[in-house]
Amino acid sequence: MPQTQIILDDTTWEELLELTHGAAAVCFQCGVCTATCPWGLVREETLSVRSYMRAAQLGLHKNGNEDLWLCTTCAQCEAYCPRGVEIADVFRGLRYLAWKRNQPHHGLSTLLWSVYWNNNPWEQPPSQRANWAKDLAAPQFDPEKHEILYYVGCTASYDSRAQKVARALVKIFQAAGVSFGILGEDEPCCGEEVLSVGHKLYFREMAEKATKTLRERGVTQLVTTDPHSYDAFKNHYNDAIQPLHYTQYLAHLIDQGRLTPRSPIPNSQSLITFHDPCYLSRHNAEIEAPRKVLSAIPGVELVEMPNIADDTLCCGGGGGRMWLETEAGERFSDLRVEEALSTGARILATACPYCIACLEDSVKAKGIEDLAVMDVAEIVAKNIVESALHER
Ligand code: SF4
Ligand code: SF4
Image 1 (cartoon, rainbow, N blue to C red):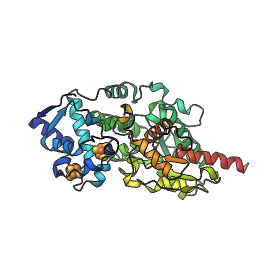
Image 2 (image 1 turned 90 degrees about the horizontal axis):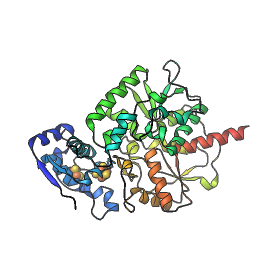
Image 3 (image 1 turned 30 degrees about the vertical axis):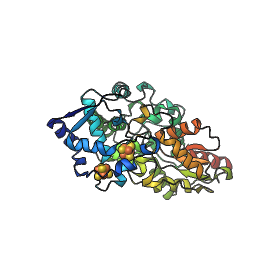
Image 4 (image 1 turned 90 degrees about the vertical axis):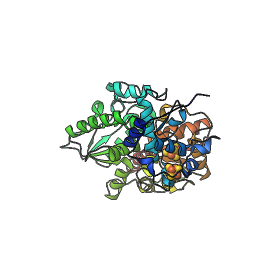
């Protein structure tokens, strides 16, 4: 068993207070957070969230405790906390202290170095950031010509599965006549993963740098692939740049009559269930847009899982967990896939690259053959292609 070293000093207390804006101060130690944290669904010994809040109140820093890095920042506990404690931010503050003491989780240092050297957390060359769009007519953003910047983000730029979502979105924008541009190799990393693993200082630096680039390029309205980037721009950047998650933008296009999925979905795929990404639903109260987009496809019948909207079950990929190993049997996404199957749906739709990766891994690991994990953008793009074929 690793030894836990407890340090108590006034400097730590003051630092934590400043880092978390005193978020833990109002905690009255009821333990609801520990009881509602999804780690309790997959582990006998759950994450003791309450004790971390106590540590933050007292200025205790528990060095060497790996549980600190379990929190996915899903905010499930915050939805139930009777005192409104910003629990995920307290975890980020405690993690920052671990970084400062040069004691981060051993699996996360490469993430930070990769962001520093490569402008992405995936250890991929910056020069290949726009490779996913090589054969697509996705122009460089020009504020004089384009109504939106499509902010692709690191995961959809480099991960081969998530690239399919970016490509689907380009097809949708083109079909709807949206004038859009991308920044290609010049697209800055938004830093959401740096924030989620708690390096608040470096995140602030990244946000300032990214803001400068976006301002210089004349960006006022951007549309993101990823709810994590959307959340970073919306809630953690000090700037007037207006972000939208792509499901929100597609819902606007449908309202304006610019996007009309026409081809009826085949009967065998008509039952769809939607997994709310935590960073869209719980962190940003966006529940309707993805459902509106899916429901616009003729024949789609949405069936809901037990845990939806602001009670969604986290996929397990946030808070830096995409870069850490989660043992078999402890993956939240395994439970989510079972919930999806219980609805009878043949498509488990979502709208986040991390959710896609976690849910798809669980479907594969469980050997499930009759449930496809798809992004909302992929479902809409497929419909548009089919509609075009029918209209010929
Ligand atoms: S639910 Fe809120 S008040 Fe209760 S222990 Fe957790 S943080 Fe403290
Ligand atoms: S944010 Fe999510 S993972 Fe973190 S402590 Fe709260 S419920 Fe648990």
